[in-house]
Amino acid sequence: MSARTSSDPARDIPEATVARLPVYLRALTTLVDAGTSTCSSEELAQAAGVNSAKLRKDLSYLGSYGTRGVGYDVEYLRYQIAREIGVTQDWPVVIVGIGNLGHALANYSGFRSRGFRVVALLDADPRRHQEAVAGVVVRPFADLERIVEEQDVAIGVIATPAVASQDVADRMVAAGITSILNFAPSVLAVPDGVDVRKVDLSIELQILAYHEQRKSSAAEVIA
Image (tube, rainbow, N blue to C red; front, side, top):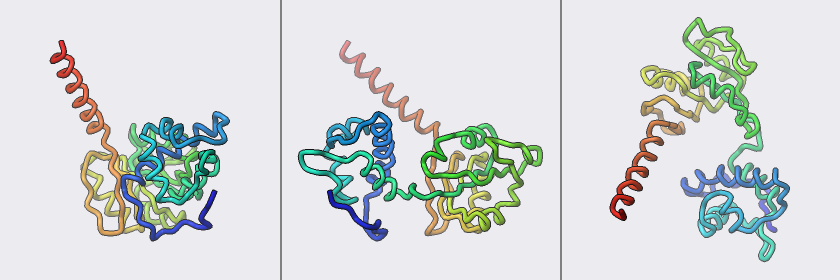
């Protein structure tokens, strides 16, 4: 196997490939937990839910980590993908908006196991302050700037109502946060250099509803 000694930040990896890397990482972690030491591209593709040609193309952007006739060293490939994504280091995260969704996010154990550490929970409602969620005390939103500076936070999560999300994003950006995960049902305007990922569960359900409708229509035609 060949390996790079360091990740090349200038290498241009397609956004679609970047979006699939965490899926491969999850599949590889499952294989490691099952005691699998090596796997073929077909086996890894099946575990990840993609076709093997697409997987091989995606991994070609990272380097040559497979051995012909043997396949991939599962633990080694998992480390290389984790390093490429950036989750071999500890990323401090702040969550703003500690309603039902914020509570659920704060209690999600997957953050820690995937390289993310929730360092602060913030809410504008004084009734939330001093409440402990997953061992972290909820603090006033006014503390955002101080926390970002003290903890060197680059990633912020917005779990507020839509009406407050843009103001929260503006404060995050001004404080120095450069990546935002937005759960609010709104489109955020941010300056260049700030990355935003939007998670909208209602849209995902609507997409599923579309596919269900298509399946029902096809069944009626066949009948």
